[in-house]
Amino acid sequence: MLDKAKADLTDVDALILDIGRRARAAARPLAIASTEAKNGALSAMADAILADEQAILAANAIDLKNADDSGLAASFVDRLTLDPARIKAIAEGIRAVAGLKDPVGEVIAAWDRPNGLKIERVRTPLGVIGVVYESRPNVTADAGALCLKSGNAVILRGGSDSLNSSRAIHACLVKGLEKAGLPADAIQLVPVPDRAAVGAMLTGLDGSIDVIVPRGGKSLVARVQTEARVPVFAHLEGLCHVYVDASADLEMAKRIVVNSKMRRTGICGAAETLLVDSAALGTHLMPILEALTEAGCEIHASPTVLKIHPGFKPATEEDWRTEYLDAIIAVAIVDGVSGAIDHIARYSSHHTEAVIAEDPAVVERFFNEIDSAILLHNASTQFADGGEFGMGAEIGIATGKMHARGPVGVEQLTSFKYRVHGTGQVRP
Image: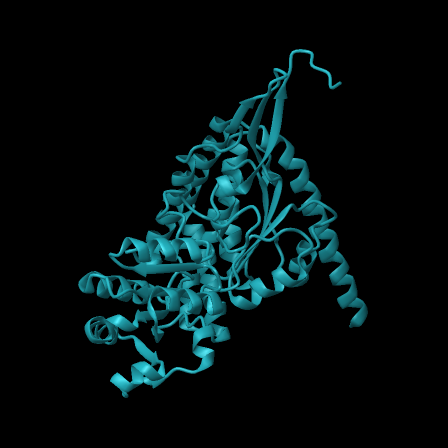
């Protein structure tokens, strides 16, 4: 039995290494592919998704039955489920990526030197991107489309629970590539559920993978960040805060706080902590908490809040560090914007924070002194999304400080190189 397991592991390693080699080979022609060819492939992919709707639904039905047999949570099953409307949305998402500006070859900056040299900084693809994700089969299409548009080859490793659905969607992506005359290996899907495939990808596949992007739960992202030997674009969790200043318009604050928490509680941009200015205790606190309660949200309150309303659940130290991804919010009173900045600096995951205020000095301090990827003024944290930023789809949100930060769209999936034009100059 041990010999068989060792042989299977060796087979997986060989399979993934071969996928890596083919992706690296495909990356070269893809990097110089024309915008027309890439957009043609994307359009053909969207057409194939719609034409193969029944095959995709049949594959998804197998995944759903397996999920039901395994007793997976309802929230997981919802993310896994496809229907005609969701398939149409997948196709529309691919077409939206086709409509984005092609970043490859864009001149980011240009300048002349005193010696006559003309220098340009130009966007180039990263090369080969590895995407490791869970449950959502639509990520197969989103990631494939974004990587193609930005001139990158991609290796997709979806969750084992969605493997049949991802295979059916991937087949449509390959049809689009082939119709446009682009290499089919530009978008590859790891065809086996073996977890060893993830470990192999994290090694970089002998230099074949340039960047890893994890999309999934905290345990997956933590593993990738710990084990990866190549750069990672990711966020571990979304501990997002909303600060309500005494200068905030009350009705606006109620709408924004409820939307930030309750629109979709399971996304990384959902607010997890509400901070209220101590100067607004008598005016803002209870109306906002009542609005949250009416919306079905459970309140975990600090001691100061409990003195005003002892009926809430007491907040513990752990509450300030918890990404609930549920209809629960922790609430604390802070000493103005200074207190909010201090609290966020201590507990934030540097994902998204919002300030609700009419005082421009408060907003300026909040924006200048908080070091998170996304900061909002008088707007819901649920806008932390590449589509809402006008970037089309996104491959994820990154909270690191190197290269990509915030929504990772087609521009963030590029690097750059310098082009230097001379007229015979030599260096003395």
